[in-house]
Each structure stands twice: as C-alpha cells, then as structure tokens.
Image: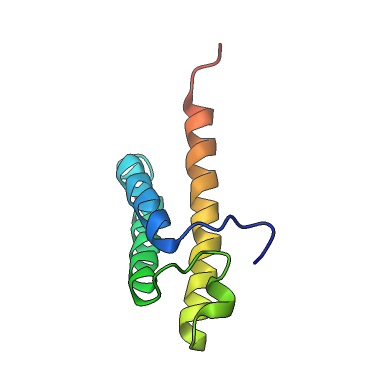
Length: 95
C-alpha cells in the first residue's frame, strides 16, 4: 500500500465524485463531466474487483489498460477535488 493514499474502496469513492459532479455542473461543466467519468470508472472497476482500494489499484488490477485508466482517474480525481475546493474558496466573499 502506498503511504500517500488512504485505503478507501473504489465503490466508496464513486459517489463522492458523483456528488462533486452535481455540485459543479453549472459552475464548471468540464470538471463536472470529468468527475462523472471518474465516478463511472470507479464503479466499473469496483464492481469487477470488490474491495479494491485506490492505493491497491495500480498493483492489483490484471491487465495493463485498466491499470493505466485507474492511474489516470486517480490523478484526475485528485486534481478535480483541488479545483473544486479552491474554486469555492476563491468565490467566497472576504471577511
């Protein structure tokens, strides 16, 4: 297991990105659609490999294309979360 990634199953992470997509649909439509793609991939792989975590995904998934897609989805998901949080913080009025 990688020390930088929490051992959260992919099926738990998928609804997080689905909610993120719903929250960002009007404000950042491209980010919302990418969040839907990440959530969809996490659901598909999570159903195929129950209990698979984001930390174990690179080592455990058989087949190079799936491992590459998961690696891209992990990075994209992290970037989307940062963009969403920073965008919301930036749009808040200053105190």
